[in-house]
Amino acid sequence: QVQVVESGGGLVQAGGSLRLSCVASGSIFSINAMGWYRQAPGKQRELVALITNGDRTRYADSVKGRFTISRDNAKNTVFLQMNSLKPEDTAVYYCFASSTWGQGTQVTVSS
Image 1: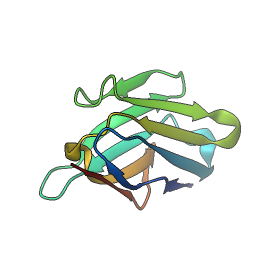
Image 2: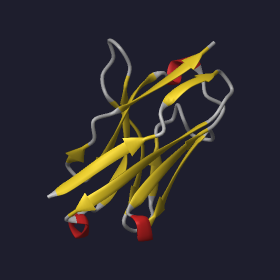
Image 3: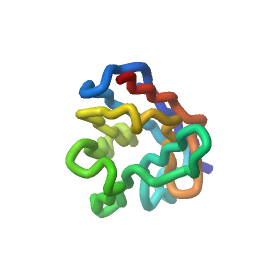
Protein backbone atom coordinates (compact mmCIF):
# COMPACT_ATOMS: atom_id res chain seq x y z
CA GLN A 1 0.00 0.00 0.00
CA VAL A 2 1.10 3.54 -0.76
CA GLN A 3 0.89 6.57 1.52
CA VAL A 4 1.41 10.19 0.55
CA VAL A 5 1.96 13.29 2.67
CA GLU A 6 1.71 16.81 1.27
CA SER A 7 3.25 20.00 2.55
CA GLY A 8 3.90 23.55 1.42
CA GLY A 9 0.51 25.20 1.18
CA GLY A 10 -0.23 28.62 2.62
CA LEU A 11 -1.32 32.18 1.98
CA VAL A 12 0.37 34.26 -0.69
CA GLN A 13 -0.38 37.47 -2.56
CA ALA A 14 -1.25 37.43 -6.22
CA GLY A 15 1.90 37.20 -8.31
CA GLY A 16 3.72 35.29 -5.61
CA SER A 17 5.06 31.75 -5.52
CA LEU A 18 4.65 28.60 -3.49
CA ARG A 19 6.16 25.14 -3.72
CA LEU A 20 4.19 22.06 -2.76
CA SER A 21 5.89 18.80 -1.84
CA CYS A 22 4.49 15.29 -1.76
CA VAL A 23 6.37 12.37 -0.26
CA ALA A 24 5.32 8.83 -1.11
CA SER A 25 6.06 5.81 1.04
CA GLY A 26 5.11 2.16 1.20
CA SER A 27 4.77 0.13 -1.98
CA ILE A 28 6.33 2.81 -4.16
CA PHE A 29 7.29 0.28 -6.84
CA SER A 30 3.59 0.16 -7.75
CA ILE A 31 3.36 3.89 -8.49
CA ASN A 32 3.10 4.75 -12.18
CA ALA A 33 2.32 8.44 -11.84
CA MET A 34 2.17 11.16 -9.21
CA GLY A 35 0.71 14.60 -9.32
CA TRP A 36 -1.74 17.10 -8.02
CA TYR A 37 -5.42 17.80 -8.25
CA ARG A 38 -7.15 20.80 -6.75
CA GLN A 39 -10.65 21.61 -5.62
CA ALA A 40 -11.99 25.10 -5.08
CA PRO A 41 -15.17 25.74 -3.08
CA GLY A 42 -18.24 24.85 -5.12
CA LYS A 43 -16.18 23.44 -7.98
CA GLN A 44 -15.24 19.99 -9.16
CA ARG A 45 -11.82 18.54 -8.48
CA GLU A 46 -9.53 19.17 -11.44
CA LEU A 47 -6.15 17.84 -12.50
CA VAL A 48 -3.39 20.41 -12.08
CA ALA A 49 -0.30 18.46 -13.12
CA LEU A 50 1.10 14.97 -13.20
CA ILE A 51 4.40 13.27 -13.89
CA THR A 52 4.81 9.66 -14.93
CA ASN A 53 7.56 7.18 -14.20
CA GLY A 54 8.91 8.01 -17.63
CA ASP A 55 9.00 11.70 -16.67
CA ARG A 56 6.19 12.63 -19.00
CA THR A 57 4.31 15.63 -17.67
CA ARG A 58 0.83 16.94 -18.18
CA TYR A 59 -0.64 20.26 -17.08
CA ALA A 60 -4.03 21.89 -16.92
CA ASP A 61 -4.27 24.66 -19.52
CA SER A 62 -4.91 27.16 -16.76
CA VAL A 63 -1.49 26.58 -15.16
CA LYS A 64 0.75 26.01 -18.19
CA GLY A 65 3.73 28.34 -18.13
CA ARG A 66 3.22 29.13 -14.45
CA PHE A 67 3.44 25.76 -12.65
CA THR A 68 6.17 23.17 -12.94
CA ILE A 69 6.03 19.61 -11.66
CA SER A 70 9.24 17.74 -10.91
CA ARG A 71 10.41 14.73 -8.96
CA ASP A 72 13.27 13.55 -6.80
CA ASN A 73 13.31 9.78 -7.20
CA ALA A 74 15.87 9.27 -4.45
CA LYS A 75 13.47 10.87 -1.96
CA ASN A 76 10.23 9.55 -3.50
CA THR A 77 9.09 13.15 -3.64
CA VAL A 78 7.22 15.18 -6.20
CA PHE A 79 7.23 18.96 -6.21
CA LEU A 80 4.85 21.51 -7.67
CA GLN A 81 6.45 24.91 -8.15
CA MET A 82 3.71 27.48 -8.53
CA ASN A 83 4.67 30.92 -9.84
CA SER A 84 2.65 33.97 -10.83
CA LEU A 85 -0.17 32.78 -8.61
CA LYS A 86 -3.66 34.15 -9.19
CA PRO A 87 -6.67 34.36 -6.86
CA GLU A 88 -8.35 31.70 -9.01
CA ASP A 89 -5.60 29.26 -8.00
CA THR A 90 -7.07 29.27 -4.50
CA ALA A 91 -8.07 25.70 -3.66
CA VAL A 92 -7.22 22.64 -1.64
CA TYR A 93 -4.45 20.84 -3.47
CA TYR A 94 -4.38 17.06 -3.25
CA CYS A 95 -1.38 14.94 -4.08
CA PHE A 96 -1.96 11.55 -5.63
CA ALA A 97 0.29 8.57 -6.27
CA SER A 98 -1.48 6.18 -8.63
CA SER A 99 -4.79 5.62 -6.79
CA THR A 100 -3.73 6.91 -3.37
CA TRP A 101 -4.69 10.42 -2.25
CA GLY A 102 -3.26 12.73 0.36
CA GLN A 103 -5.21 14.77 2.88
CA GLY A 104 -4.85 17.97 0.92
CA THR A 105 -3.12 21.28 1.59
CA GLN A 106 -4.78 24.68 1.37
CA VAL A 107 -3.44 27.27 -1.05
CA THR A 108 -4.92 30.74 -0.75
CA VAL A 109 -3.98 33.56 -3.11
CA SER A 110 -5.09 37.02 -2.08
CA SER A 111 -5.74 39.78 -4.60
